Length: 131
Image 1 (tube, rainbow, N blue to C red):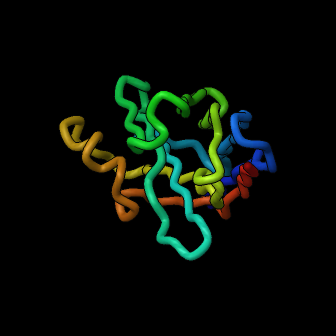
Image 2 (image 1 turned 120 degrees about the vertical axis):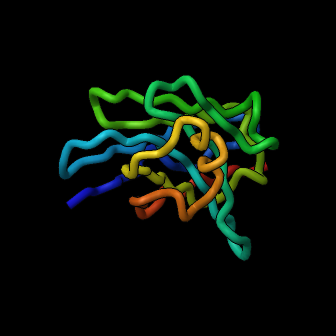
Image 3 (image 1 turned 90 degrees about the vertical axis):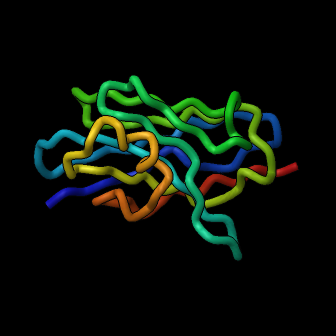
C-alpha cells in the first residue's frame, strides 16, 4: 500500500517563504511524475507544479513561475516545493500527487497538469498567507 504524506505547511506573512515536503512510502516504485496541486476555499483544485523522474522536465502554474521551485530526491522518495514571495492568493491546501504508471516520454509534460494522470494523492497540507 502506497502512502503519500505532505508536511511543512503553516502560516506566513506576505512576502515570506515556506518549503513543503511530499514523502512517499509503502513500496518501491518509479514515480514517473510527482506533482503539487492546491485548493483554495470555494475554488476547484488547480495544478501548481510537477517534476519528472529525472528532473529534466518541470512545469509550473503561470502565477507561481519564478516564485516556486519544485525538486525531488529519488533516493528518499520525496518531492519538495520551495515557495518564495508568498502572496495571500497562494493560501490553499496543497496536495502532493504521484504517478506510478509508465508514461511515454513525449507525453510527460502534457500529463503533468491533469489530475487523472496521477495514481496516488496525499491528504494535503494547509498554507496560509496573511497580508
